[in-house]
Length: 228
Image (cartoon, rainbow, N blue to C red; front, side):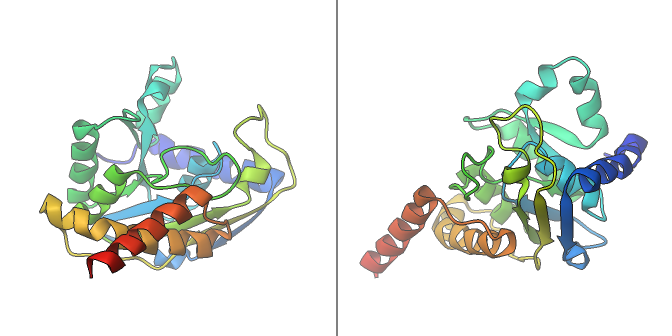
């Protein structure tokens, strides 16, 4: 799936608008692989996050986007042209997984927000197991991306952004795992991977882990200790 010319055409005015309305710091662009497939996993604070991440990333990325947005006239035409592909939320979506893996097989970049929705309070919420499974199955460099300040800039309950916020976007060092094709083995690796990803996103974004995520991590650590 080649990048549509509209992708980079819109990236420049998007960056201009964001920088005109917020104080933006971008770090770690050299951590994005300049060739070959890669997976970007950012925390999700605001509706503006995909525009921020994709317009600042030095390589084009295909972003997993909730399928309901593809039902909006005009938006349905735009989304495929800026690299979006649909996912059905709150249910297993094998087709979406196949699309993501196919894009990675072609050497493309794919962006997935592992929380599955925007934060309600700026903290990092538990990750969707399907995203963690896909990341471990893919066997490509995984770039954790910390997004901080977009919750203050545009929280989910406001219709318009609040100018003047300080936004930080930090691309972390890639995580690399061998592709795990066996589902049982992936299940065994999920808790450790979730802890690692949560820690990286917390440190990169400066955002705290939600109580729910802390409890899930603590329960898996306790379960591991009990089994030993």
